[in-house]
Every structure is written in structure tokens, then in C-alpha cells.
Image 1 (tube, rainbow, N blue to C red):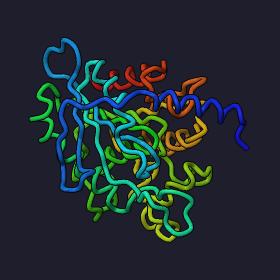
Image 2 (cartoon, helix red, strand yellow):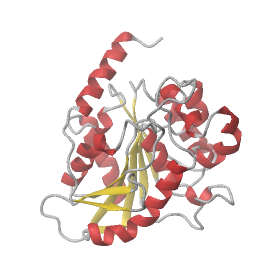
Image 3 (cartoon, one colour):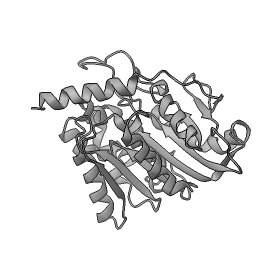
Image 4 (spheres, rainbow, N blue to C red):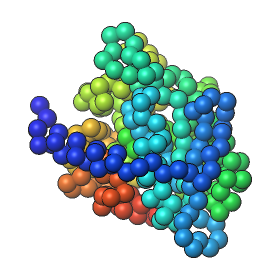
Length: 292
């Protein structure tokens, strides 16, 4: 049973993170025909000289429809104010209507959620040339929070997807690295812990598809990647517990790859994307270490 004090703290942290008004982008571009096939671009703020790194942001929300990219726009703006060019990616999420027997909106769509992230990542170099001429597409870091952290790890692992996968790349993507924030990074452990009400299994289409689809979707199954990767996680996170991150890091080590793990004391799930929280500055520093 979760400590009531922890629940109260988590609610306060969520309220702080969601209290910031949405920040309008400098430009929005489409990478496909669906209304969710869009990327918001934020130009680096201040006196920037020469090309700057591009940070690709993938939002969380358990891959569920009610949570779109708007809630993470203050974080995108925070990174732009730190001198980065930023691309905030939208993608299709689960239905806003519960399926039969479900207690709420269903997590993700198979295969559309993965179709969209792959298409957006493939389209970004071309879109950036027009939208953010200040961005250096040779210095790209992908970051994402919670379910978006999962998608960030997945986007960096497409070259190790099973042969025959429509999303597989013939070579590693041109990335400086990944900074995954409280990611749903190990589906088996996430399901054991009931993370986000069984969202991982829902994303794969339910228990009937778990074994078939897990190797194409689970970051812990897609190792090693050869891409520099850091996971940032709050020790007091009750939404995606620390054990999920530790399981992913252990899986990477078993595969012969070192993944950085930064654990923050006294921090829960939402301060990582809250510009008012000290944890957000830690995230920006982790991104800087990979990008510059």
C-alpha cells in the first residue's frame, strides 16, 4: 500500500508541473496527414552564435489520449531558454474512450503510436532545415518523460529491432544520445508493479499480443544500442518506481552496455519536467553533457 504522504507529495508535484501555462511554439510543421502528425519547434532564446544542438522531446502521459504535448511545452521552452533548439513531437495515443472492461482511456495504439514516432524522427532532419536553421542536426539528443521516455529509448534502438520490423533502421540513428526521464523502460517489471494501470500491456494490444510484440517495443529487449544513454529518475517516484529504471540499466549491463543512471533524492515523477523544480536543471545539465 502506497504511503499517503507519498501520494500527497506526488499530487503536489504534479500540480506544480501542470500549473505552468502552455508555451506557444515559434513554428509548427506536419510530418504526416493525421492531426497528431505535428512537431512544435522552439528556437533557442538569447544571443546564440552558430549552430546549436537540437533536443527532440517526446511527452508522456501513459500513451493515453487525454495527455498531449501541451503539458510539456513549458519544459520545451525551458530547454530553449537554455540555448537549445527544441522539437516537441506529437503522436497518436490510445482512444479517449475506454475499451470494454477497461477502467479509463486505453494506453497507446498498435501500430500507430510507433508508426508516428518513427515517421517523426525520420522527417525531422528535413523539417528542421526550414523550421530551425539554427539547429545542428549532427548534434541531436532525444529526451522524453515517462511513456515519452520509453519512446525516446525506442527511437534510439530502431536499428536493433527484429529483422522484418517496418520500423527497423539499417544503421544506428544519428544521435548524440538519449536522456530518458523516469521512463517506462522495462515492460516486464512495469507490469509486475502495475505501472500506470497496466499501460505497457495495453500499448501492445493486451495480453494476447504480449509475447509477440514485446521484442519490438520493450527498450529492455532492444539492447545494446551503441547510443549514449542516461536515465534520470527520482528516488521518490511512485508513478514509475525506481525499480523500472534499475531493471533497464541492469539489462543494458547484461548486454555489455553501460547506461548512466542519475537518481535524485527527494524527487518524484513530475519535477523532472517542471521548470520551477531544481530537478529540471539537473535534466538540462544531463542533456548538455551529451549535446555540446
